[in-house]
Length: 222
Image 1 (cartoon, one colour):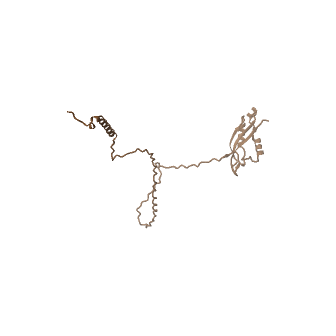
Image 2 (cartoon, rainbow, N blue to C red):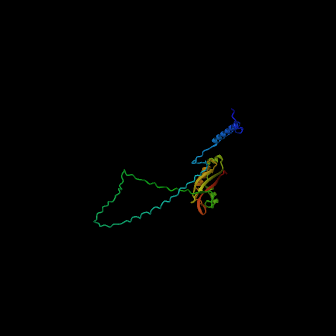
Image 3 (cartoon, one colour):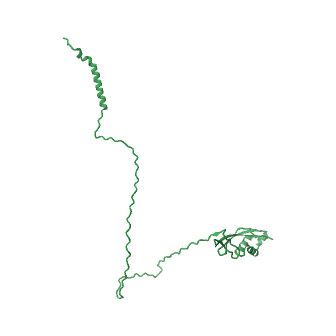
């Protein structure tokens, strides 16, 4: 006996459609399952912030110290007057001033004051001068110079330049030859200069000072 089916309700014809719809639905569920995220309500979202922190320079506070207490008043000396018959309990300390070989003696050295040498000038407002001027100086040299025998025999002649210092008192010191000719003429020039009388000292701002002086002395054979 044949079963009679209504062709409109026959599901065999739509079997393939249902299968494709089921596959699409299953695939959709799978994709939704992969994309589904569960968020925790207590989860906190943190963001890394890079901040340049500049440390503040801490300036220490200056603590003002309280002012020191005023010094105590100096004790006043009370002089107690006692009678001659009252015995004094305090003993006086007697210093032994006796010196023997075991006594140590402390020596205190005297500090010598540093002596500042006076400045020697080369040019001053008023230069030193021979008593009577240059004419008397040449006269003195002509009378006192003795031509050395060695220089005379060797025919040595020329000018000897002598340097010396005229002090504030007019005395001659530090006599030396700057340029000589030899043959004993240099020593003769030094001798004559050392035997000079006192000069009139040089002055700077009205005050006598030490002055360095150059003197040429000529030795010539006649």
